[in-house]
Length: 251
Ligand code: 5RP
Image (cartoon, rainbow, N blue to C red; front, side, top):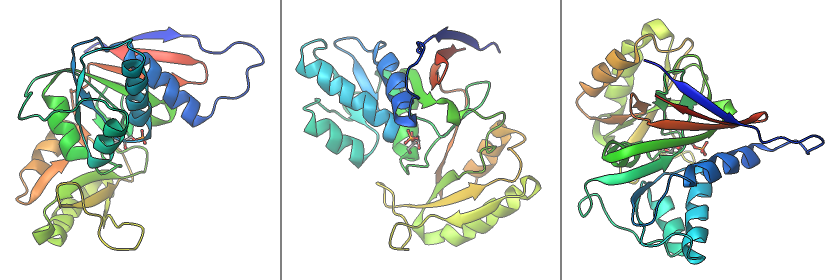
């Protein structure tokens, strides 16, 4: 496996410090270069993907892009795309997409990802797996040496019926990584409910996951687990914006 990196410098001298949002926007702008008129596009979810959707809306409005059609990966993205008059479709209507662009929570050196802190992992994985290309947009804070290494959540979507049963099984599965499993709650303290009416169990690791592929397989065997946030060997390219430039990593 060989990951190739191309860097474009973005800093001139005496430029004010770039905020994290500036970096997200730079990554989003670069990703939109991959979009061509007539494409069926997967529209990601999250603050970085929202910059992509904004830009697509602008390019359509100004006639720089025509005839694109999007498949949103969440209700939030669907609302944003509708507000920008981006034509939408479904996976049932278009089971093969040309390109999906989405953010990520973690990116490892082999371009494997953790996704779903925004709660949209199920639709994201379906749309991105159905796409001929999947371009990830992120700022440099998302880079990790091993998945689970950021100490932030790795989400697992579970059916409501047996959430605690699966929380205990997940805790047991990852005991060597020192995992803490928690049911995700919303701002009012109630369980967070996904667009697909499921719950999310968030896994917090003390040490990175040793073997992502087998972890993904083992999690997938649990009855009542709907999907997990390990996106392994799915990204075609990862665009990382940092204070010293925009890097495009490809396999
Ligand atoms: C949502 C996701 C997002 O892509 C991920 O959480 C990154 O979000 P942000 O760009 O806001 O950091 O997977 O389910």
